[in-house]
Picture 1 (tube, rainbow, N blue to C red):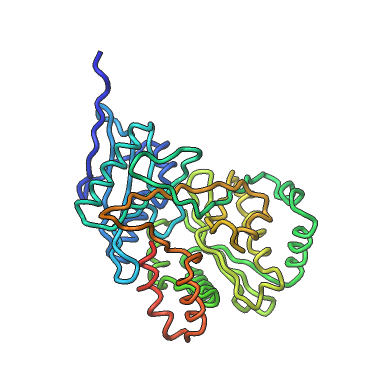
Picture 2: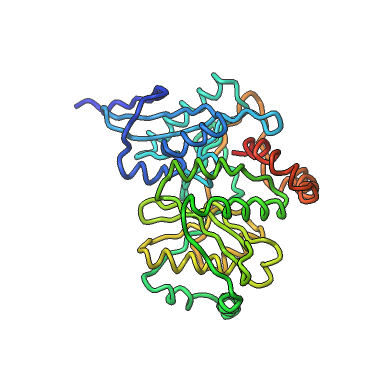
Length: 349
């Protein structure tokens, strides 16, 4: 009896293919065509989709975009502007075949490196790839009764949530009807944090591409003033926090606790099983805040194939050069950071 034949190929630009449910779930929303198509439309990134097939049946999927930026370099990456995803396989053989093809593609294109970001569990990368463990994600197991989750928190954290509920905050969940407020809150809060942000057109295109799977969440103060916002995306039984920020002057009133608790209550009621709080740098203040919600902390696989003798990139806040840029960005006026932000952030997909 002949052994199954494994083939790996690049899909044509307009070739459509239906992924089995297990592969689609592993690839995540950032690894599927609606996401990569919208990112390509906004930032003009070339998209490369690689499949592995065993006797004509799909055994693996790898979706990459090419980022070629004058500041941040030339590279291939999965899950553009997402924490992880875009890489799914049914066996180690299929996995390694996809990675070999991705490495060959990177060499053909002349990029500096290939970066594959995904949930790998305890897997180690194959020869020619290295793991750079700097991020984790935080998974909250939801329950039909949100009060069961409240009982898991520390007394201090429960007290902060209850205080936030007495401050007069209100929350709205919606779609394009909340685009203006969601963008304004996110752009302002990111500026306060010293980070560039996308344009409103980016958020609009995302919402249009994902449809009802995306919800904007906007928090308002007691006088109706913008307080914070988030972008939450659902896939199957999981909902993911893509962005969520609070304006600085409301943090002391525990507006962040109000936003997260409002989200937890909503998605418990809607029957979701898992809330992914999103990635954070290991040891960061964001991680400390997320751990208060008693999630399962899961380290993310950030595997790199370094090409042409290039070194491991350092595109995160731990880089001392980024600290200088963050300090400066906070002090620039909005009329500079709003148009410049999308140009910069497109380089750190």
